Length: 148
Image (tube, rainbow, N blue to C red; front, side):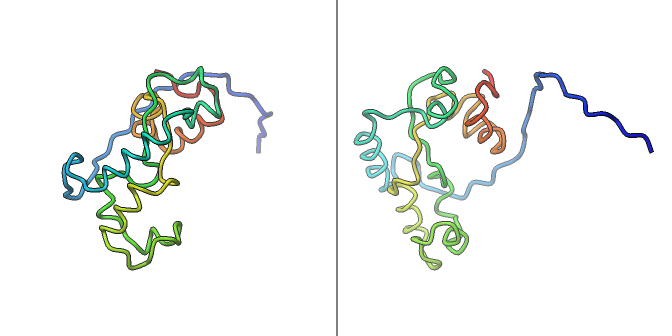
């Protein structure tokens, strides 16, 4: 059996493409959501002094665009289809028997549900809605991991 001495892989760039189909449940238009007022109130009340969640870790030189409020756990479009028992495992404040209405209320008004992100880290190439979870999380600690 031949052994190979440890060799370092040189720094390199590697394009990544992720393609899959999302199955969104039926939901009201965002503008008609009765919980949107709570989301908007949180955004207005906490905007001053806010900073990008990723930028606070990897450096704000990684950031681009205005700050946007991101749902860290459940987006509005899927909250009404979330399984209460599954959510309860990670969020014990949510009853195992919570209704879709109660879950949506939590998703739209719970402070722990929100993160401020710059446009790049929200919807851009390094965005929570764009990059894979593993890559998005790694960029919190590896400056410059994802580029535009």
